[in-house]
Amino acid sequence: AAVWLALPLTCARAPDAPQDPPPTEEALRELRDAAAAALDDSEDAGAAGASDEERLRRAAQAAVEDESPLYQSLLDAYSSFANRLNAFNPRITVIGDALGRLSASSAELVEDGINRDDRFSLREVELDMRADIDPYSKGVLILAWEEEEPGEYTATVEEGYLTLETLPLGFRAQLGRFRVPFGRINLLHTHDLPQPVRPYALTDMFGEEGFAENGVILTWLAPKIPLELSAALLNGENGTLFAGANSDDPAWLGRAEFFQQLGPSAFFALGASFAFGYNDAPNPVNAGGAPDQESQLWGADVLLKWQSNQFQSLVVQGEVFGLKKEVAGGREHAFGGYGLVQVQPSQRWYFGARYDWSNYDEATEDRKQWAASGYVSYYTTEFLRFRLGFEHRERQTTGGGEPDLDTVFFQVTFVFGSHPVEPFWFNK
Image 1 (cartoon, rainbow, N blue to C red):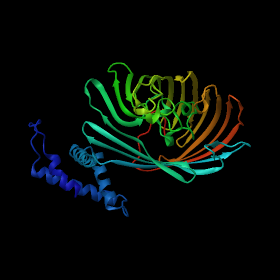
Image 2 (image 1 turned 90 degrees about the vertical axis):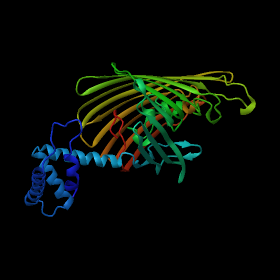
Image 3 (image 1 turned 180 degrees about the horizontal axis):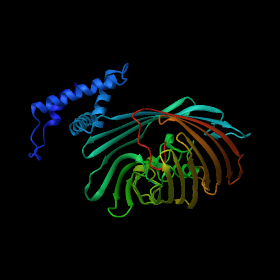
């Protein structure tokens, strides 16, 4: 039926090609007869038991293999029509991420008076919706339900923004709430991470949820050199870097990223980021005045990826951070970073290791910590991943030491619905 109905539309010639006369009635009859013959051949060639849809698909494929231009035009027209029908429907994805922590030492992780070890939890569920708003813009809305305490969940808006794709001179804008492009790992949601937990240098600088803000980002891709520049105007509501919900002045961010292809199987990227804002607000908030305690954060990141084919790859990545933060009565300085290596020896398996270091544990100056971890990930399909990891973590406070933490991780991540876009430097 699709062939019969779409045929007259496909055979009509465009106005810009008048030199080709429309097909005659005899030609149309021959085309329809050929379609019926292809369907019969498909059935006779062992398609017994196949569904009607499958037999039609095989018939169309057989016609294409005969290199018939009219049949190819027919398939192209049908595909274009189907895509137009779905162009403005949202692509909806549900992502679940569960994590188990088992303490392998006498000490256990305690946060906010709650023991986080020796338990399994569905730590986050995300509802990801994306759609083309019109030919010039796209929209993204990501809602999340996160476990704050055992068995208790809080609903949040992880991201919700509009992207303007076709601004003049190669610019692109993003407006709303988004993960800030400071470095690389910060852009990833928890379930997208190549390891069970975020690098500790990032959580020390940005907080447990990372660096997400409301604001505007303007991005420009250079036309002749592999360079991308970004500038952002933010509310400055990050509670670790800036003034949090009481922020009275905007924060600013700039990022430059250079990338270079190294032959057919490898590429290299180097990035630098800088954020500036104020970490105090007038007290009380409506008393007037202006904030004057500055926060300055810089970062540098490097990435090297080698991929000989679809199922074998190697990733080497690292980031370093430096913070200068003015506080009442003085100034704080902090440093941190991480390095990781990930190897994909076959289609379904990934092996990785990571080293973390920071002197700003729990946003406290001169409170050092380091961690070494390894993990293995197994994908049954792109929609289901199992991961097993081990981490050794040592923490130090200004008044003494805390016990070492040895932790075994077991992670399960599942996706259903429209499969989301993957980060180009990692396979999820």
